[in-house]
Length: 54
Image 1 (cartoon, rainbow, N blue to C red):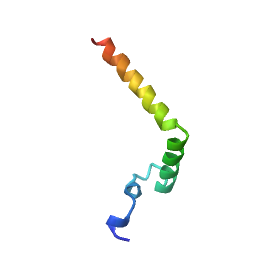
Image 2 (image 1 turned 45 degrees about the horizontal axis):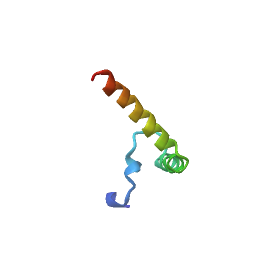
Image 3 (image 1 turned 90 degrees about the horizontal axis):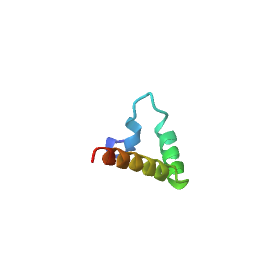
Image 4 (image 1 turned 30 degrees about the horizontal axis):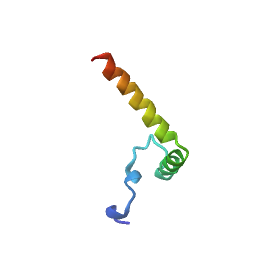
């Protein structure tokens, strides 16, 4: 299989699970709202930091 046909996740460092596992978790977290909750939490934290220095 040529490099152009490989998944970008196939090049993950060995300390991470297989790219299939990473992709499966990403899909699960996307569909169950986990990624959205993480984004909202991080956005809230950034807003607090921003307000702290204004």
